[in-house]
Length: 122
Length: 473
Image 1 (tube, rainbow over the protein chains, first blue to last red):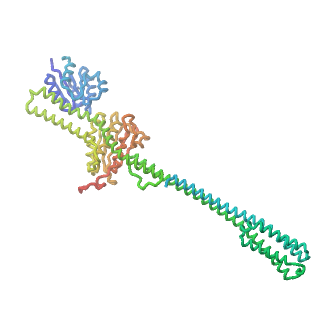
Image 2 (image 1 turned 120 degrees about the vertical axis):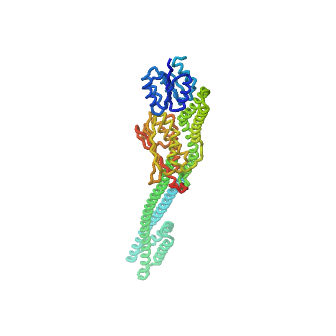
């Protein structure tokens, strides 16, 4: 079975770097992006099994990424992370489209569990 | 003097004037009455004297004894009358004239008494008697005429005095009312001016010594209140600063969470991949942790610096740096609210001499207001420029938010004025106004509903304030 691939988008470079290290440890293929624009470009070329994106970014933000992903690749799982802890209403509104929501600081183990669940590995 | 007492005094003077005029008029009336009584009596006497002289003529013409007896009778009768009205006459023309009249009558009576048949034809005696009769009659008529004239004179005099006093009273009343009303009006205008300026955050007292009346008491009370308000304002400025921290923290939370998350993720990953890492890679991990803690430290220091209560500390500052610093504080709020920032900061601006802390507070306040006005996103425009004519620096902060209705615009710097129904205390801009005024600057607002709002702050350059001491312009 081919490796699952994961796209990680966050304007904080460390998030992508660490996610990549950690996810690759578990056998995933990981591509990281520092902004929404370059991620959207990549999404036009390639389908990812999971997209982990920051919600609030300059320019193209997590919501736009979500919309594009749902349009281009409806089967792709989207997991949202954000530094805003108090966005309950927004989270609720996105509940249908977003597989999971993680406020920063993110527990990587929980994130991985969520990804595994989404991919039917658990 | 108290206004109350002034009015009492005015009334007292009026009453005194009226009483004096009354007394004067009463006296004149009494005098007129006395003189009138005298003229009535004198007219009677004059008539009797005339009859006496007629009888005297008859006596000389016809030697009529009856006429002589008639004269004698009239003399007795007149003497008696004179005795009876002695007081009236004395009062009217004085004792001297009365005595003279009585003297004339007595002399005439003696001459009549000395007449007998033998001397009837004596021309000397006749002449003497005629002279005495003539004297008596003339004197009597003269004083009567004199008194009649004097009555006329008194009436004219009284009339004039009454007329003058009437005008005097009217003039006095007018003048006094004018003075009191003018005084009150003047003080009231002063008070209105003062309270207005206080409501704008200027706590200058009314300079001149307050007068010793009720208005003075009000002015003193307002002065004391201004002093008290000035003290309170310091507390309000601080509490406003703390309140605005609440708003800032909402934005800063995001700022804090990012480095926190980075540290956390580094730590988690570090533990997970430790075995596969080289020594250099491990050091690299820890260096990144250190960098992230530095990020946190800066954010927290900025916040604490902003929150710390401080005595006013004026120092030279670079205008554009002040603007950049507050932008760092609000950047995340701007990002969340989808607001783009357009900066047009002039190069080579003269420095300003400010309490940077306070000016930051003003700018943060205006920017957070702008953010709230652009709840659907927008553009925040910050311009700095130099006004060479006034030697002032101008900072303009504009938004393209919902704008402020014209009827609110005039009150925007008033204390407790707010259009934000629950979230606003209505003190933010009032405090800002006070801070800018304290810096000898100015703050004004222009707004159009649906177009946006622009706040313009002017601050004197440090050169203008003669605070650039290090020789540099």
